[in-house]
Image 1 (cartoon, helix red, strand yellow):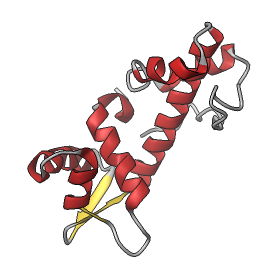
Image 2 (cartoon, one colour; image 1 turned 180 degrees about the vertical axis):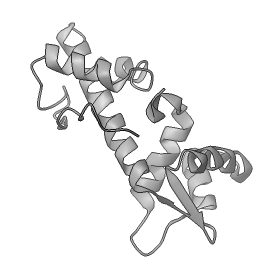
Image 3 (cartoon, rainbow, N blue to C red; image 1 turned 30 degrees about the vertical axis):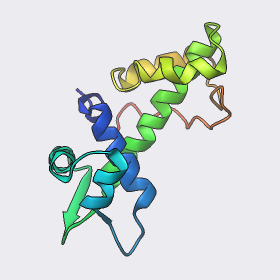
Amino acid sequence: METLQKLTRRQLEALQVIAARETPPRGVSLKLIAASLKLAPPSALGHLTLLEEFRLIVRYRGKTRLTDKGRLTLDEYRRHHRVAETLFGHLGLPPAETCAAAREIDLAISHRTVGEICRAQQHPSSCPHGEPIGPCRSPNART
C-alpha cells in the first residue's frame, strides 16, 4: 500500500497546514496546527505522531516541518485529486461538483490507477478549476 493510501483525511489536512505555515528557519507549533484543524492539541498530536512514523514530518523542539517525503506525498495528493476532478468533469459533473467527487476517492486510488486515468484522458494539463496537473510519476519511484 502506498503512503498516500495510508493517510486519513485529517492527516492529509495536517500536512497541508504544515506546508502552508512553515517557513525555512522555523517549523509550525502544535498549537497552531491544532487550531488550524479545529482540534485539541492532544488530538492533533496523535495525527502528527503517525505522520512522523510515516516519515512525512519531523518534530524538533516543539516545531514541526515537512520532510522531502512529506512534500512529495502532498504533490502526489494534488495530482491524484486533480486527475480525479478531471475524470469527473469528463463524466459530465459541473466544475463546482468535481472537487467533492474527487475527495471521495483521491486518497484511495493508487499511483498506477491515476496514471491509467491520466493516459485515458490524454494527459490533461489542468483540472476543471485551472490548477496544473503534474507529469506522470515514474513507475520505479517509491514513497
